[in-house]
Image 1 (cartoon, rainbow, N blue to C red):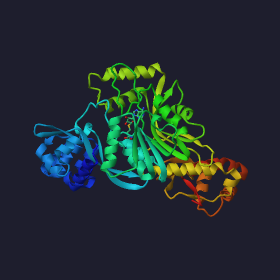
Image 2: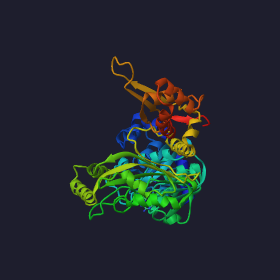
Image 3: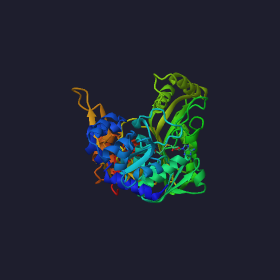
Image 4: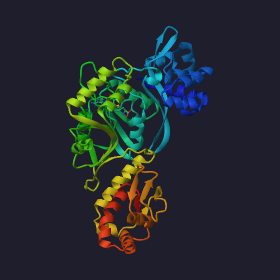
Length: 500
Ligand SMILES: C[S@@+](CC[C@H](N)C(=O)[O-])C[C@H]1O[C@@H](n2cnc3c(N)ncnc32)[C@H](O)[C@@H]1O
């Protein structure tokens, strides 16, 4: 890839203001929002009404529309049409340029704030491509945005993006790490990663070809991130395999390999954030499988966001590959998926997030939970890091030491009381978290009283004694009941040590 051509493309995109703001100004907010829902027509109509370089580049590079070669030449004065051909962006057919890649302005948000990149990827649904090629390189989707949001807001030396695709996670990692290694089994993906790094003026990302941890054998990283090809698909004749989502193994074996390999590739104190799918087999919980995969020397936190039965799971990924229920192939492919799940005794598939870390103080914590509620992602990465730190802190405190600590209620916590009409007191008391992972927990009067009194002034033990006196119960018995729940509220971010 020629750097001068990429620089020329960047200058042309900037001159045309092919940015999120520029697109909104050209097509309006509603048409721009429709792009986010993979609907091109409103933006196309608006762009055609306002000809000019931004309109041309929007139609060619964002929507994947053919445009007259002369029009593209006007829109790319520095790169030129020959340059666009040399970069693999378009093919020229007669007087028309046919897009081969998308290049889209992509706003982002991560632990360090907001920004925008141009991201090149393969043409997709927004560009009118319904059946994807097997070596399709994914653009930036919801999964990548979620993984970016889970990254810890901590600067570090080295980071690994395993299965980098178009390189968007590697770009996020580079904001945190001095040096990033981005791996993939797809040479096309690595080419696009290099293109995207150059297009956005980002250095320090090294691309390496190979499967799983092969390209980084013997190396350890401060931060590992992966949105791996975790999709479970039948290994059957006539079932298409897409490189971007399917690692070619049976069931969730690829996911297992990614998790199992982490121990050998994390620096002491290093962290990993993964997205993944795991199977519930033979009546056993899928999260129990994740527990088996995780290296016992690592802290592990598995969050199952959604659980699908085999038919729901198969339909989801058939739709993702462009096969809809009305398509002639749909039921045959669905049957192959159901056969595979049935053959291997799979009852359901869990989909979610994994956070692991090499514990700084050598004490391991483990959490396996289902959190189906909506979660605001803005502070998710910071929250996971804080929760691990809180777990570490608590692991070093016995109950007597915890009782001597001063805690305060996090500012995003509210209390909700539900009461039967005419009743003298509440039947249900809930604590709700506005941030963190958006949890709601039911508490009894004693715990509600304790949390309400946690303003940092008095130690936890003194508050427990006071509540025991008020409720006329034994203070020792109440402490034994409350302190484990206080620990949970500290890990989940409802309560914080005053020293924080
Ligand atoms: C779901 S995509 C993720 C792309 C990008 N990181 C993102 O989050 O949008 C998974 C990537 O893993 C790659 N991949 C597939 N099999 C792999 C393997 N065995 N080892 C490493 N990468 C693999 C695919 O080519 C694809 O680029």
